[in-house]
Length: 509
Image (cartoon, rainbow, N blue to C red; front, side, top):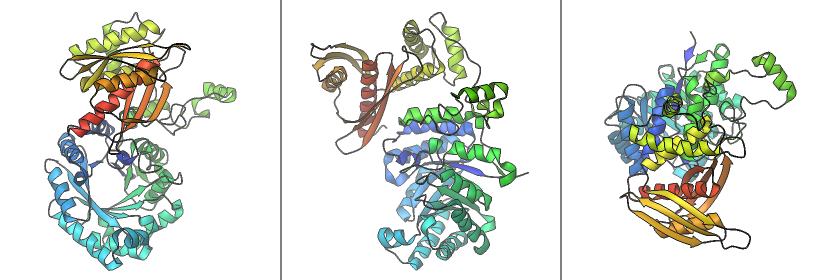
């Protein structure tokens, strides 16, 4: 039997640090449920000292996970950080505090402004302090990729002696070659006393496009935990993508003497969910979960795949949940068929909410010959957003043309059920709709990004709009809306982004 490699998911902490990918507590709980369905071994739920929202997220995910996964809270090597992390983890069945500090010359000199001896002592002291609260303590040596190897070994030795159960070796800037990173892990195994009794973790970044290769190089040399994120979200160019790490280990289990317990068939669903929640699009040619990952346009490739799938596909799409039985839905489909297909896609609605989804489904079906799974995903996500919305867009009417001044009239319902009507003119129909919305909604954000894409193929496809707005304090909020009318999609996306801003500002995000 090969070694088990623990999958430590940090989508909710490091992944959230992608610009524009911020998540509120409800968002994190939705993703956490999917991570539990994936059977990840640890969920890094947040950095509790950073904000009340992160504190609540760690608390609630700790309660949600039970014994199914370790729930991890990040803390700098500072006592107040560790105190806060411990408090947030109080209700967790399997709490872990993840504490540490930078170890590279750049971090010691420019960021921390401490000596090597002081760094070693802070590492020892922070781990020992965290052990007062929890048995499971993970130590991170930030920017280990650029650290002096002998000094890195000193710091890790101090953490192990202080009681760390996991030592995390990050290539924080993604700058190393895989063989260089492998040599670091090998050196730690050879020179740190007692390291055979702790888990060696690797945390790699994708600045040079090698995050997955770096992680696998660490596993080859004995690392038994990989820190990764869904879709490779993370600072700058992102982290090692969970789906890539899992499938690479699955394909090369014998060569690497390693396996994971992740349920691979949940990977595609996880990818789509994280994309929808964060508003971060997955590139079409993304490995494992991209729209083109199992698509073939070349005639030679098509001929080969038709004769034998593995001519050009090394992974069965079913293995990662990319395919399954197909139920064709149209305007002639009834409630039972719609509910059945939604359940297959992982959506369940109480009867009162389902009727609203069904009415919306009929509206789309009347305009399309066929309603695809991606359409249903969009409809279901739209409904979930409406249920928790502060403001809900009821209708949009626009008048425009080459000789007419673009004018929009919107009807918006607030959380108390009161309906508001406003009209405005603008440079175009979308601009007019946004100005009308601003007359009703109490907050405003400057439009930072506007992205349009078709959810499915065909001229009658649902159009999906993702917008990012910047609040006065500089925070970025994303929103998504979908409809067969692009102006309506745009208005929904803007209202959803404003809802996120409002909920954050009043503290219920």
